[in-house]
Amino acid sequence: MNTEDSSLLRDVGKRLPYHEGEEYLDNLLEQVAATAVRHRSQARARRHWALMITSAAAVVLLVLGIGLSVLNSNEKIMVTASPSSSPMDEFLNSLTDEEVAQLPYYEIEEIPEY
Image 1 (tube, one colour):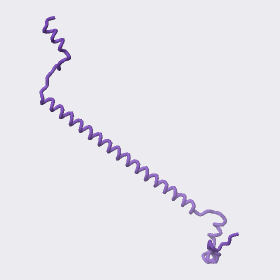
Image 2: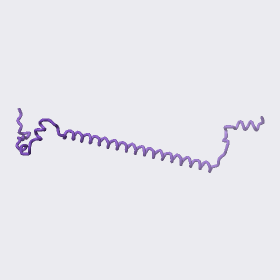
Image 3: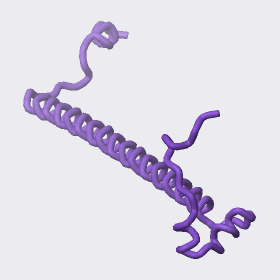
Image 4: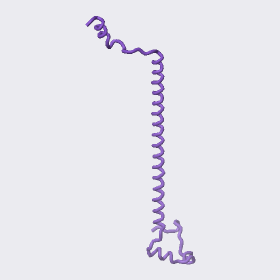
């Protein structure tokens, strides 16, 4: 090996194998910055959409929950309002308006305590 080859081997790893101009490095920095800004805005947009979807799902669940509870309460009212077949109900339903007007009616204050 001659001295020129040995000096090349000693310099391996100490210098870059290629040289780039200032314009290339400036363009590279601009591209990296633009990509970083784009990725950050995309991540922000993804977070925004995730928040919107989560909020919409919560509103839908809330509306469905309230709607179902209203439907259940209406069903209970309808069940209690449906005519029953107890003897007392049959008797009261068989009375005419005049007979109902003759029934004694008591106020809460008029009922004596025993």
